[in-house]
Image (cartoon, rainbow, N blue to C red; front, side, top):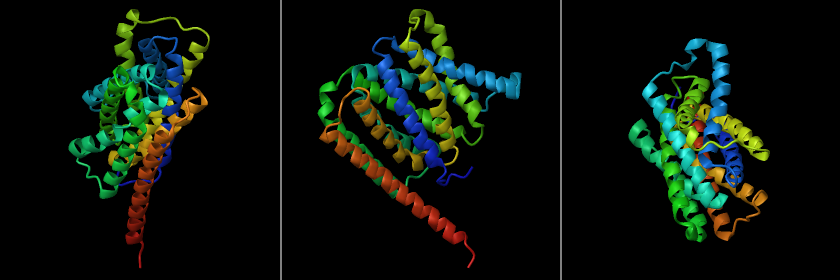
Length: 296
């Protein structure tokens, strides 16, 4: 797969961002009554079982064979640690503030991609990331009273998730999306299953609905993410990840009755402006490539 930007990757990425924002809102609601690690365990167990049965029926007993197994294990570990840290952040911060802090992730993705994947960010990427990161800082300003374990957990979540994205990009063109998705979930499920006797609690009522929904949303979101990163570079797509913050702001208002204040709205505007800059750059580059390929 070519490393060049492919416009078909964008709908997949935006679908993933919407799905993840919905899952985060459900996780915050669930965390009010249900243990965090138990929720994270079931969140990974559900897609592992669904994907495992599907791949077993389609590929037979060798469905779990993976190219570059060390990277697959690292992907699973970084993903489950990122999720656990973010759920801790959700338990200690309002939804929008938790999302804002975690959105240093695109900046970390670009930095890691340049070092690990040897991808060279264009000037427009740095401008978009600067706008996005500036938007994060502006939106976070009134939330500095929330510093502490929630902010630290959100920063840790962003760092581990950025590592997961870069590792996914490294193998996304070599393996089908479904096996990639299975391994990312299965590693986390296995790790937490071993420790589950220490934290498991039987869910009841709405907790069951939320757990099932979170598991299915996680499966859908990461499938969309893998499809996106199989079509475009991590550097090209990183600025568009900020759109998830707008979705989180909506859920913060719609579900938790917390309206974004002026700083948050200004921050979101800067973030979306960064995505627009990146989109215009990629469109211009695609048009230039198409023009050069057109016979005179």
